[in-house]
Length: 149
Image (cartoon, rainbow, N blue to C red):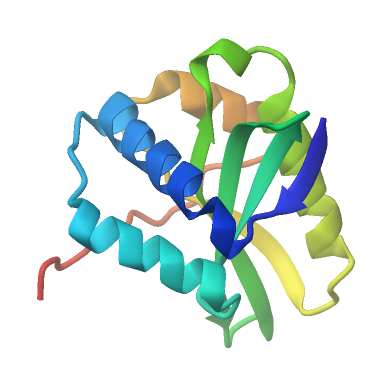
């Protein structure tokens, strides 16, 4: 299994994985007229975010995205893990861990990156346990949003 950064030609698979992720984890149907240009923008401009893909032969097995948050309090970047998806038939084969470990190593190579963060659905207890197992801890913060504006 090889881990690599997604490229613009990976647009279709990244969109499909995001669509499946929303459907499976939150029961949401994503608006493809927003998703496709959003993913395309990230694939074209790493300042918006990056995706890492797990690839075996010619098949993409899973993905993990990263977006960024500057912390003035800590003078560094947090990388937010986003859009985590592994094909159903590839689960329990170490795909998630391989992508995650690649991201951790990549983050450690950049002295400006000070930590990793993620958000997870309240009721997704399997994900809670998975993330705790790889070193994530609960913070005292809760995420709020105002969307749409």
